[in-house]
Image 1: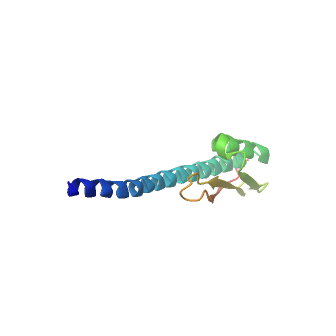
Image 2: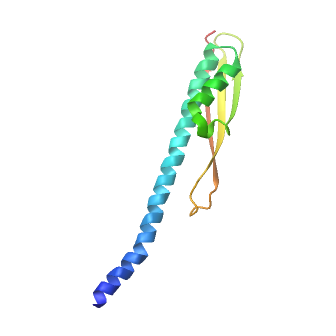
Length: 120
């Protein structure tokens, strides 16, 4: 009878720790996915900036790739040389709130910069 009680107590103590670790792993995966999305958006926008002189087109491409979650809060800057062979640089910074109450709901700044040679 005593062993059944100790097993139940151990289970009650271990389950919250396991769930907290699982929640932490999920939060890390969500932040990693968002960082990959920001990196992909900066590369695609740099590609657009390298082929088109209008920086608004590069910003539109970045917002499309970022999607509805990150696009409204992202800060996108485009710097493009006006001669062939120069550099087109796109920098994106986006805040991402870690949603877990367990971790305090802090904000992580996601950043990515991509550059390509101007083609036209």
